[in-house]
Image 1 (cartoon, rainbow, N blue to C red):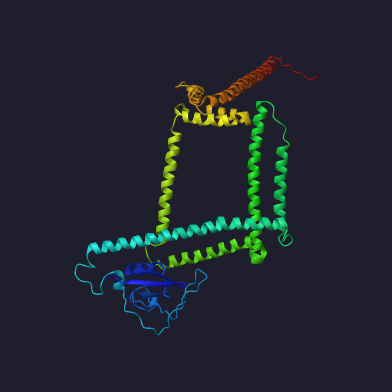
Image 2 (tube, rainbow, N blue to C red):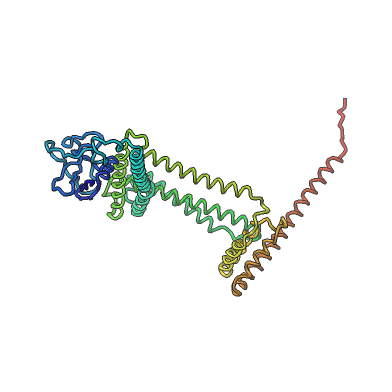
Length: 426
């Protein structure tokens, strides 16, 4: 029967675990030579480094440097150098005897099981490595910037350290001025009249929105830089405790994760299939699969002829419901949404099946009577808008034809002018 073991880390007793599991913990770096272990059924606790064959390289426990503790509890001190070693050897940890019998360790079945067990252990360690790297990346790129932003916003509101970080304050003030100027300019835009003016106004509104988001993003980064600079220079005295404590905890956790990642990578040094390589390979495979899926969808969409891009009845129903919600509050927005949906199909121009307008009306016919009445108001405004757009388009075409005709007449007149040659007198 396999032995059972308890082990202690940071003052906490864990277990029991089997011989094989204890060996896996040692190989992955989760169990250190300075940790203490106890065989179930005995009262003696010994350093894990004193178990023969548990670690690949013999460790002098009395002279080794214990790992950094990952919590507020100190790691247990190593045992004295003169403590006797236990009788456990590598054979008891791997489940084979020191003198293998015929047909045991040399059999292909046993070798296959050992290889599969090793691969499974390394794959599990690779998953642990990915989880720790992901958590650390999130801490550095999301959590810490957010807490720095909160601290910087508080400092800027109270104008604390304004003289010490004058450049950062000037940058923030400039960004706030640009945002205010942009919002004032948008608010003072005159109300658009006519189709062309409304289209121009819509384009300007979209441009204002993009510029506003860009400036606000830059402002957020500037506030985060202010908070980071203040914390790095003044530490816990840079602000209130509720703003400082999350930053300190996040930085401490990031350092702990960096230490754990380094320990896992160091424990697998010299191996061909290290957890890091397995993790990179797994991420690469996932990326290839995602790219293949995205590329396949893109190619399928590009190969679809325009005349096959018909209007979906479900899309018509969803659009009609949205138009009904806008019917009372913002009828113009309802008309824009309806035009966008109907003009996205080529079925009417290609003569393939019912027109988009007919598909839309058929979808509305399935709605309740009250909704149909509300949609009828939107549909009436849509038809008026279409007629106005057609008149505007015809007027522009007529003006274009007139300009072209006038241009042709001027060119004709220029050609018909007689050529007058002036002969100088002798």
